[in-house]
Structure formats: C-alpha cells, structure tokens
Image (cartoon, rainbow, N blue to C red):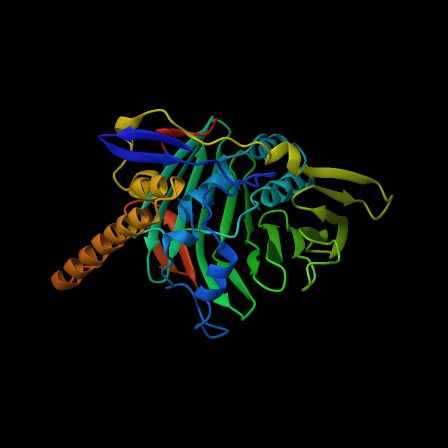
Length: 380
C-alpha cells in the first residue's frame, strides 16, 4: 500500500488484485463468522445494492478503482496487440484474450461503494483511463479510456446488482462494454461475467455466467461460459472458461475455446485440431504493483484514492473504531449534499459522461470528451 499526502489529505493507492495474492492483513478476526452474522436477517433473493457494510467487510479500495485497474494494471500489452494484428480474425482472437484478462482474482471482502460524482483517473504508458460514478441509486459506474498513439477507445457502463441466495451472494454486472480499434474501423461489444461469493459449505469466490464478444463490422462472435467449482467446492473445474468463436453470418465455428482464466486459455481449430495458447494469466496479471502518485497537485477532490484515503489507512492499521467514524463522515456528507439538491429541486448531472437509458433497457454512458488526458496516478 502506498500512502502519499495531498494538502495533508491521504491519497492511498493499494496493489491491484493479481494472481498469487493471499495477503490477509486487512481482514478482521473471525471474518467468516462475521459474514454469516451479517446475512442472518436478510431474506434469500434480496437485492443487496443498498446494503451498507461496516469497514470490517471492506477491502481498502473503491469499486471504481477495481474497474479501472482491470484495464490499466497489466504486465503485458494485450490491448496494443489487438491493434497490431493485421488479420480481422487474429484481431478478434486478441480482443477475446484481452476481454478474459479483465477478469481478475478477488477476495472475501467488498470494495467501497463509490459516492455520487466520485472519479478515478489513472494512466499506463499511452493509455489514459477515467471513471465516474454517474448514479448512486442504482449504483452505475462509467469508464472512458483512450490511447491516442494506437487510436484505441474504450467505454464501459457498469451496474452491479448483488443478490443474496441463502448460502451465496451473486453479483450480476449489467451494462455494455465497448472497445473501438479506430485504425481498423472496428467496434467490439462484450459483457461481464457474474461474481459468485459462496459462503457455505466451503467459502469460495469465482466468476460465472455467459460472456459474449462480437465485432459489429466483421460479424465475428465469441460465446464463452465461465464456470466455478461444484457446490461442495470439489470437481477441479474452478475458474473454467469454455466456448467457441464463430462467424455469425454462416454459423461456422472457427475455433473452440477452453481453459482457465487464472491459468491459460487455448483455441483449437476444428478443421485441423491445432491448439494455440491465446492467454496466459501468469504473464498478464501476476506480480502487479500498486499505482504511483506522480503529480499530487493535479489530483481532483473527487478522486477515489483521496475520498477514501483516511478510511483505507484506518483499515490498513486495523483501527476499526476510527474506520467506522471516517466512513460515517464520508457517507453523511453525501446524504447532506443530496438533501440540499432536493431542497433546491436540482438533479445531479455527471461531469464527464452523458447518461441515458438504452432501447434494450438498462443504462448507457457516452463520454463528453473525445480523448482522456494523462493522469496524476500512473501504473508502473
């Protein structure tokens, strides 16, 4: 964890989730028993979107940072590879691999629910990433990332909907992810798997569900399924990814996809049975380091690492009473601002995105600026 001062206010930058991280230093004692007590009076099927968790259950990082880090925290340039491929099929395969790389390990703790208007702005080399919390009820996050050198643009709109099912919590992540390779005139759309937190009988966390990736111009489609372990935590198929890449116009299967998102993923050509590794998690998401604050003066007051800095520091030091007090101050300030807006008859308007409801239902977000500027927070 990196702690740096910005006008005597703490900016806390933690390591991103990556392979091999077993650091339990932030966990409160008897965490599992505390989790069970938390859900004791919650009915199965309940939407947990409005549930306010005490700091004992928080990982010292905002959900906005988690979304952003899955894009800019990487040990290899998979995104650039998507742009460099000369063949449309090879580009599509690289986009599928990049999409899998945004699936990250996590822990049995919850990041902070971002406050309305909270932002996170970070860069890695030529890729600049900006996120904003554009709605609080329901919680909706928008992401805009651009690389002017490689002419790449990315927009995400994400709405997590966690529900309790008695022995587990499953969070469906609604919203569209879009990647544009502007040099090739191609737009790729994809969705996100669901996060499954199993509490009993064996505590476990995994990504599950269906993910579809499609290129609007070429008609190429990937249909992937993420699977977890069996109910008892047995079976050996945890973190499995399986599916196929096909041409939607002819329904011809071009490749079969199989592997594990935390290990390797391969494609197999059904015509000649040749197998090729397209993704190696160890090369992409292992040993990731915390971002660095390179320009303290340009950190915005709405920056996640600043908004939650004191709370993150308290959690790091296991000062639980102080953590509760700091979290209460942040949340009460937001309630006060909401009451003031309501008394004036004002609606809150996002600063960096235009937000609207799509024809298919749900939320969509369009960035106001064409390019994201370089950020004061930099990923090594």
